[in-house]
Image (cartoon, rainbow over all chains, first blue to last red; front, side, top):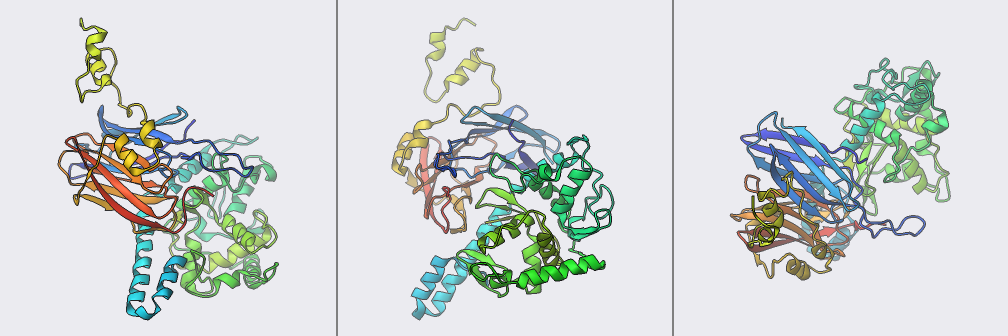
Length: 103
Length: 271
Length: 156
């Protein structure tokens, strides 16, 4: 089962700043292991963020996004205490959704 | 001045006649690298290890099905806040000086019932082969962030460990006749692209110790102080340093105590 | 609800099939994960091909796209990139790395109400131009910045 993300959401002057750390190998599929075998590609392909049922960001990623991805963005309207949800799906069909309250 | 990457040094040498212009170029390269390092601080993947470590600390595990919450890291059973900044130290119950990782393994054995071999099976993780030790170290050290380093050497064993560590620091051996001193006794040095802190200088010693453990971007892993020593031994072509050996504890004692007075600032993020 | 499937599938340009199906009650809308991964765009090997695959054609250079990234990355495995678009009507921001085996790194869709700035970290195999492609009101714009990499980040 995929590891939880770390989500920090802080509201200031009507704008919510969101910082996310995701736990994922983001394997490019170009690396070889010690035995010389290619390590298969394993990376997050899509990301979405929602607040009160509204989608506030979506993304499509390739394996060039760094391992243990970091993402930061801002959206308007969220209040302290509101929840935001982050979801990622990877090329193997693994998925992870985490929720955090806005500070 | 911060150490520079090889290619920048090459350019600077190439414009030898440029004088002031050459210096300006070197300065701006150092500034850009500082900018890079600063941008990395915004999100440290070490937090993912910290979260796992906190769960592992509180989870009932091992043959005795007990959590680590009664583990005494030197400030009393279960007191985690500020504990790392006082380690290594003499522990009466084990009758020896222990650094954090040694004490952690001790608690896993005595409280949870693991054997030493089980507890110390994987000190350094790789990708999906995770190390519990690294996760636990990340969490416990995060609970000392900001705390002023305060390693005591009041007990005779602590003094002995310090003296042994000092001797090890200056000892030269191996096929290259290297010692820690070879790379870490002058300021402004680097190996290829890696800055080398001067550990014989108070400020260098403080910076060198207080920024481990760290998420190493080049490996995509969180690495502990035992790892740092292990890897230095490997790079010097010394025999393999055993995880939590007396020698590793002594060297840690020497380096940790030399960092006294500085705020502990880990888990950090590094190249 | 007498719409036939054929009616629903007669999509007008700009509306996604998913949205139409949702409107007709065939699909319950939920948190919209990005539509099928754009394999074609992620697998091309050059920036011009990527622009073509993304429908961007030949985007105009814009000074209103600000790239916040260091000039030098100490390690190519993790290069912080922030992109801010000041172009009105910005709908998406895409990151491309010219010298990577596959230049398309990440594509962000920005709904109304979300600021047109995103920050992430990418792998760069070597010193290269990094492109920020912005789609605004159906038009495409681009900015680029060279980032020097001291140690390649593609593994090994």
